[in-house]
Image 1 (cartoon, one colour):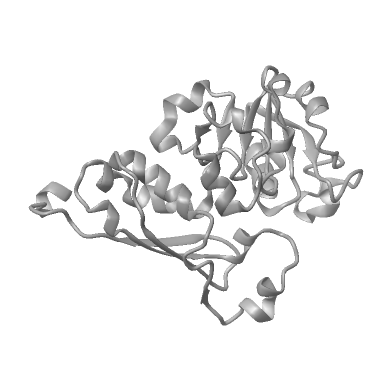
Image 2 (image 1 turned 90 degrees about the vertical axis):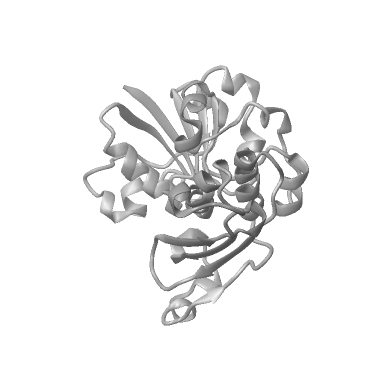
Length: 260
């Protein structure tokens, strides 16, 4: 069995990760990490885990965790994984980071868009962007995997084949995205209250959403050049899920047969 530990197991991403791993026949979760609920039973935080998970929540001691598991998942706010990872930890375990700390290769771009000083930029070069449709073979041997963002997964996979095959003008891409409210995390925010979201729909993060440079970087690899695109996310009144519709101009001379 692969022993897994999760730091941030009580957030929405952490909860979904627990659900997926509990259904994996080769994985045993031995560490349910959570700063907010240390020593509280996991099933008391999420009652749908009653009689399924008996474990209590533990802290985020990365060094102690690394000695107890084979793989660590960090479902944490931006900056935390980068502050905890070290060579000593990576020598013992693989890390799959669900935050944005290792997704963007250009440290200056990360620091500009996230407003954080990167705590461990020395590990960025070896981190593999964990979009398996593109980097499947590299993921297999990686000890540090940067799990892609939600909007980015939908947006990249929508346009990647067309960009890579040179069928569209990569600089003309417009991405119209819509997401449920769980994407904003489990913390209490006025903008995510029921009365604010219900029967409502709004664009947010216009020209400033942090997933923009991540999409641009990955599609830029496919295009073989740096690209800029228009990305507008919208909040819609549903719990979860994302719909992306992307638009782009065809390159001169591209036919329907070429696209098919």
